[in-house]
Structures are given as C-alpha cells and as structure tokens.
Length: 154
Image 1 (cartoon, rainbow, N blue to C red):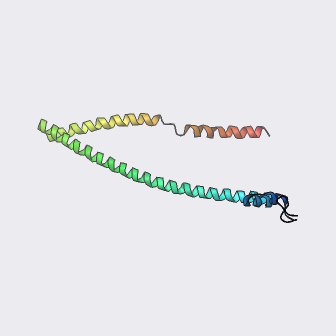
Image 2 (cartoon, helix red, strand yellow; image 1 turned 180 degrees about the vertical axis):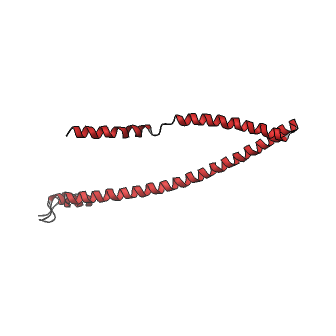
Image 3 (spheres, rainbow, N blue to C red; image 1 turned 90 degrees about the horizontal axis):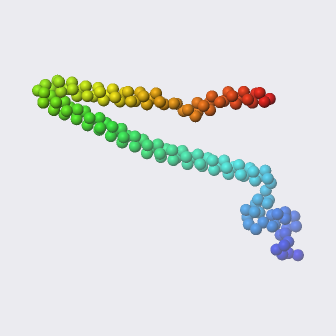
C-alpha cells in the first residue's frame, strides 16, 4: 500500500513524511536543541558579519572625515595668510597716509587686540554655559539611589 497519504518508510517520523520541502523535513527531523543551536550559530555569524560591516563603514567614513578635515585645515591656513596680508596692506596704507609706517602698524595691532578681546570674552561666556553631559551625570547620580532601593527591598 503506497500513496501520497502513506509514509515512504514504515519507521519514518510522520512529521518528516508530511513535510513538503527540504527545510520542513530538516526541521521536523531535528531536536529542539539542534534547532536552537543552529539558530544561535546563525545569530552569531550574523552579528560577526554586522560588526565587520560596521568596522568597514567606520573606516570609510573616518577616511572621508580625515580628507574633509585636511581640506578645512588648508582653508583655515589660507584664510590666515589672507588676513596677514590684508593686515599688512592696511598697515602700509595707514602708514602712508600718516607718513609714519610704525604708527600704521600700531593702529592695525590695536585693531587686532580689540578683535581678539571680543572673541575671548564671547568664547569664555560660551564655555561657562557648557554642561558636560548633563544626562549622563544625572543618570550616574541616580545609581547609588537605585542600589540603595534594591538593598532595602531584601
């Protein structure tokens, strides 16, 4: 007696015989421990691949960031040179108008002292407003309370 309703072999598990594809047959023939083991191996492999992908992406982004930072550094250097030469031209122009190059240099120097002082005051005020990681500090402060609560409940 053979047919689609009958198992292929008399000793074959009915769940394996009822499976319609290889995956179902394999799952029906495995123990729960084997399935969990396979699942853990697959998750572990997936995590390793995700970490490798994250490392590769981080390296690529760090390279891009490094190039961008280098370009910005070069732009800052060029701007510094431009300010230097503009300051020198202003010094010569003022010195020529006053017939005294030394006085022109002093006036430009005083102008830069005023700009530096303004930047210093504004920058210091901004730094005083900085709160280093307020959420982290708050959560760290709560740790002793959390530990104390657990001890009291025992």
